[in-house]
Image (cartoon, rainbow, N blue to C red; front, side):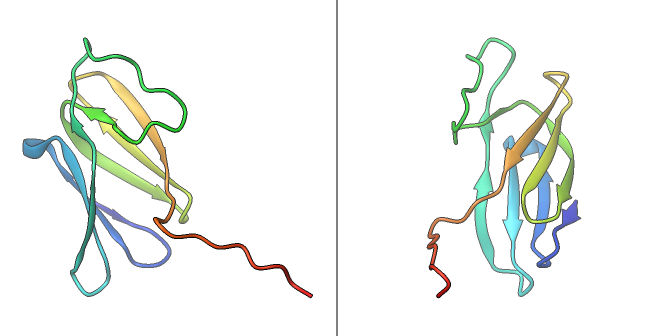
Length: 92
């Protein structure tokens, strides 16, 4: 597993084909991924439905990117981290 700069933990769950995300208090934030094999269609830019066959390693880069090693599909997936609610406020 790995943590980002805010202390969120990213835990690969190879048996469930997902990556779990929990906060510093141990609360579940979300799950990333679903089952997918090499016959699944390729992901498109902005796709949130990530197909994973067996993820056993993860690496967080600051709070922007998460890298997943999909062993069974022999690939590394880079996931852009975002928030469900974002707001931009102009600075006067």
